[in-house]
Amino acid sequence: MSALCRTEWRAVGTTCAAAVTADSPDERNAQAALSAAQDEVAACERELSRFDPASDLSRLNAAGGRWAPVGRRLLETLRLALEAREDTGGRFDPTVLPALVAAGYERSFELLEERPAAAPPDWRAGAAIELDERGGRARLEPGAAVDLGGIGKGYAAGRALDSMLAASSDLAGGLVDLGGDIAVAGASPEGGPWLVAVADPRHPGQTLAVLALDAGGVATSGRDARRFGPGRSLHHLIDPETGESALAGPLTVTVVAPDPATAEVHATTLAIAGPAEAEAHVAARSPLAALYVPQIGPAIPLGELPVVTQRLVVKAA
Amino acid sequence: MQRIWIVVLSVWAMLAIVAVLAWSSRPATPLPSTVVQTAVVKGSGGKQPLVVLKAPVHATTATSATVRP
Image (tube, rainbow over all chains, first blue to last red; front, top):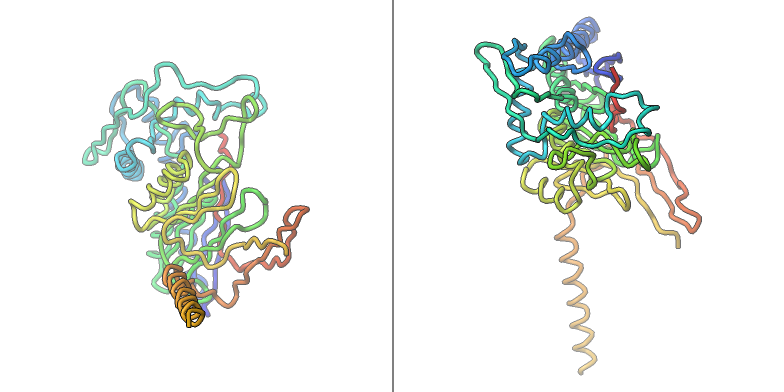
């Protein structure tokens, strides 16, 4: 059994944690690795946050259709987002930001009840994003704006994990958790896989299942958090086909993928899909796996979900 | 004689069903010794936790709250 070194901090609008399995009794290497993870998350936030007016993404969104200089992290995330849009047939779309803002995502929560949200009249999905990777710049279609909230957090978790493990050769494994977007690699302190619990959206504080992961990423998306609008019918999951809060979809969906950015993409996609569509989506994209929690009824495992324990429901005699 | 054949066929049918069920069910991932399953009894008055033992998880994934500037 090895030692676990762990740290927690606030970044990307949430609570973050990083942990390493250290084979060496010298904790300095482990601490240096944890610092490397924090530095990488901070660097990603400086480029990818839409809430920081000085970030590369904010400057790109404000460029009014002109080329804007962007860092390599933003370029890489935009490329991943474009690939995801193509892979999902537009069900994942990083250019839903105007619709997201129109839905009330940026307004004070107390005021959200007062205005029914609707898609902006001139908004359409699939706005063009041009990348000049050699020149380090990007350009959006005039009027378009990008939100990389989910995929950006997943991307940052993966990069932080890589930075952490590259910082020291003494580490047997590591985990980075950015508010539920989780990346793992190598051995846990117990010597086996890392155990990741899936929170039960219907029973706060309880666990729906525990997943065992040797490597890869986990992300959860859903509509169990903040809801608003008439009858609390609106949420932040925008259907790119309508530009409005998605009607179909689960309460939450947790996706396991080879990396956390991919997990985020497909969690976002499945969060606006019905059970049959979700099952077909996962089946067509091995090795994806998911735990789909419908708005009513028991959770549905999709694909080869590495579940090691789940709550059992036993009917009383 | 007919009864004997019925018994023999019933036994074979039952064995076939058991074989199909065993073949179609996925092998369970072995539980780490430190992970304990939680059972919940579903009674007429709703669900009543029977055993709740926390698994030694390293992280928990859940929908993150809406991010504000």
